[in-house]
Image (cartoon, rainbow, N blue to C red):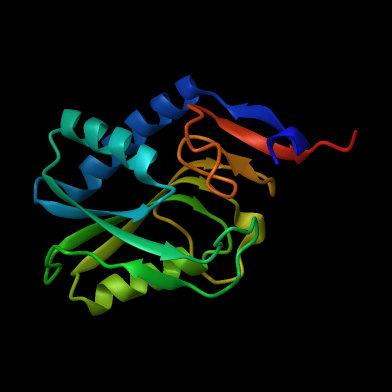
Length: 181
């Protein structure tokens, strides 16, 4: 598959790091000194989450980290439209503020469904934070609270995002194009 793919750098590692630092400042200012639960959506958000929590630490934020795993893509490069929870959170969320972190908001289905799901688990309030947002692809009425980068309708990989479980290790964001030669 790799020989049929062209990766074009799109967002640099430096741009990502600078934006995450600014987002951490904004999040810390909004959420204040109270301890909150950061819930990272696996697998795509793990790299973003790791860098974000280090920046939040530098902002003196108080947080606990948990994970949830959901899928709507499987091995495909387009969403199936069905969100399935594969792994649930383990920390109690009753009367807690929650920051739900994802790599990208595309259709908005996964983020909205998990946002609403965490509220049913007793969360006081659920904020959402994504590294990238593709508003042109939105099919549900949902917008993340914090967005690193608004991007056009291009398929991207790197920095935790994958194509059939490949390319997560790239330290920048690249646009995926098919090689037609």
